Image 1 (cartoon, rainbow, N blue to C red):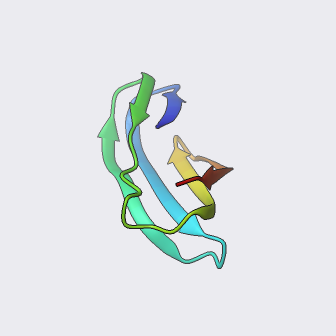
Image 2 (cartoon, helix red, strand yellow; image 1 turned 90 degrees about the vertical axis):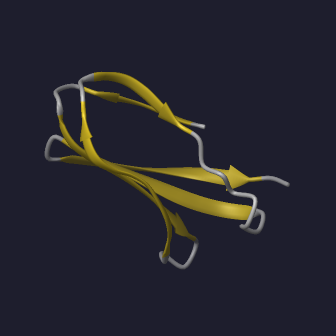
Length: 70
């Protein structure tokens, strides 16, 4: 589960990348209201390992690291 906050309403995109910086999933790509949100990544088809997710909203981008453990 990825929790995130949006300061103002607008377009939001969340993408997941593998360690080779290849996009493996797009979790969100659309307009959202301001506030706290969460999204669940169904990673059942992916191998255990290190992944990164990027949240883009309101002209800002934040990338975080996560570890998938199976």
